[in-house]
Image (tube, rainbow, N blue to C red; front, side, top):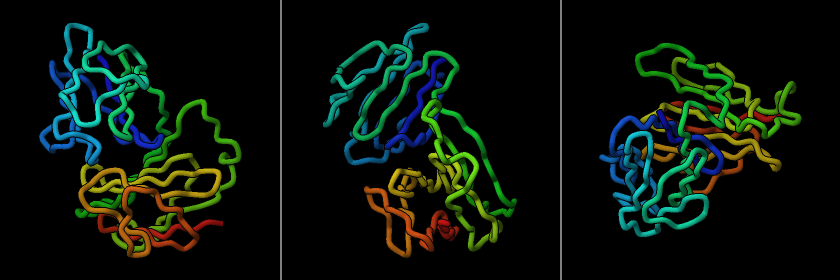
Length: 220
């Protein structure tokens, strides 16, 4: 069974198994794969499963559908093909494998309101360099059921929030850590300011507010 790995700026947002004859992609909420971005048309493309083969059809989208950098209208997908829609990249995997390694999932607390989920991911083979061992930054939870919990940012990418409600990512880059909105109608806040389309460079002591939870970025 094939699947799709959706990513933005190297951050994996979701993985979707292809189980239906038709799987739709677009900005509108009724699509099977919803990509909430103005560069994506309301009904952008559709994946059609014919036997073991999967075809992608562009639905006359405004900005087009690209496979491995080439504009297409209809094309048979091959294993490891990358579909590009706006700034999003969707990797097609024709059998059960993944180019990404999920290394840790922490679900602190069990209050009815539900504290945020922390997930660390990193592309395999990218090399962590000096990331293994010493911790250079942590996120401290300031309120809610998980208050006082610290999560070390030991991997290249850490996603925080509540899937389906509001999710953001913290990515380690050569120049420091950046915070970006991934999904959800409401924008997360950094020091009370909404995070727009561009990632925000985090500074020591910055306060993040996401899905009703406040967290502080602490860099050593």
